[in-house]
Image (cartoon, rainbow, N blue to C red; front, top):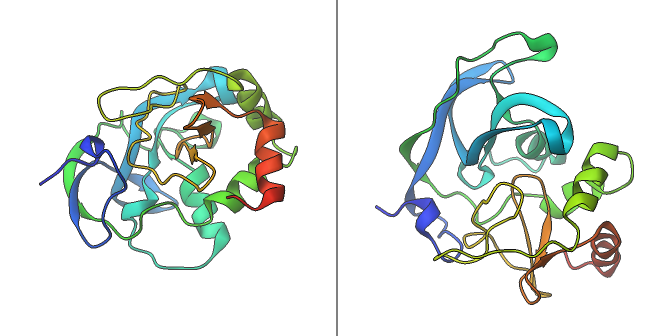
Length: 194
């Protein structure tokens, strides 16, 4: 069985993959969750101090069209601590588990990017500004996001050659191998390319 991080293209819906997984409490539900990227905190970049993992929406079973549910999936990570520093989960450790691919990308990712870049999220805007114009490196699979070195090889690429990192929504141009600025992201939104 292929590991999701070995892919050089989008996963196939209906196929099983080995996916990093954590068992933790998330929104009052203790369960196993498919995750993407490394265990990290975003103290420096987004002023979010708890260590956490991001849920991989491609393997979540819920088939709802609720934008706010998917926004929670994409922007509310599985964290070790709750509000006020209350310990929710012991040190989160990922392990491999078989998951069925339900979709090729995160639902509503364009709308959620729009919400994040609307100027109402100053920490996110600082994050985008910090990486704007940064060169993007590659590994044997393809491009990797400069923020957490997450592989972008298994993420969908838009018609204009832009791929969105599933962790913190940096948008990377695959033609120039650089991160787009907030102005470029807004131009894409207006053009309807997300």
